Length: 128
Image (cartoon, rainbow, N blue to C red):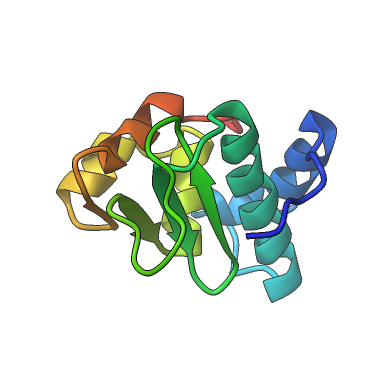
């Protein structure tokens, strides 16, 4: 995966606030580009905050990032994967929804012995 430029906290906050009402369930779904910006900046922030390559976080169709120190994954399906939809991702990264609860109810699919470690790094910011 090619490296991406660092994401600033201001860039993340602006992208998330642009879709904040939707995240909280108080507005209609925003434009795809706004959702993409919020998902990508938050996922890349997770990668910056928890650098490493042992867990892959996927929010299709917008982004996949590797994070958390441990054995490096290079080819094929990684052994530790966290995957979810854009709304669930944005809810857990903003603290609107608990990672463990979303994992328990199946909104987040996590496979591998280290996948649940992602929850230790969340939320990234609050919009409450």
